[in-house]
Length: 97
Length: 165
Image 1 (cartoon, rainbow over the protein chains, first blue to last red):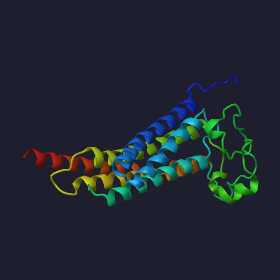
Image 2: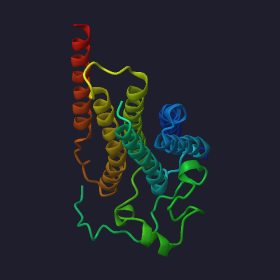
Image 3: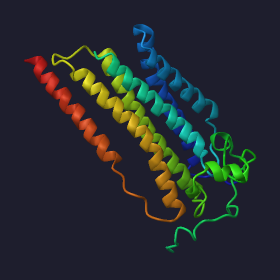
Image 4: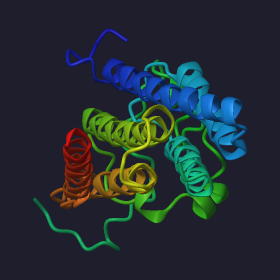
């Protein structure tokens, strides 16, 4: 299209998705590390979930449409993070350091 | 600003402003916008999509995207708290006071989990307010994060003071 948003809002949103994916990747590395080194099964599952979030944000992260990202995709992302958070919390309570 | 009753504001017709079909990507896949080739059938929308998603008027896309970025910023805050929790439990040596490390890690993990859930809720509230041209609702989220960060900071100060003695 000839008209381009001078504020580059869609591009900024796509970059925000990528940053969020990278943040999920950091948590995934930490959780997977604990899972592999200490046999923490719940952390392994949480880490795998967050790797999926990372891959999903990068695969789907193109410039979003005028109506924004689909509500269900936001819900799926939040659901994965919440589930990972619950697993990490339970793992912490199971193996109190 | 016109105040419309909630029922009267329900719009059943297509939104007047079309989606920008040249922008696909996250917004394209699974989009519920009626103009999208990926839009599910109308009956399915009624079953799954909450009513507020269709009420009022589609806001300026810049505001929709700004709301989405704010949601993502909250989600990153939640992820940072989770990262702090896992790193604390794994990489930091045990404190002299028993249980403080685990307690602090659990506090961070629980806050991160709750915050992730509330980030969606906040996004939905703001989106709904924008569709109706209402002022944005107030939120306790920054207050909660601030209190948790302050608690964690106090705990660290106490541990450091005990350790150096």
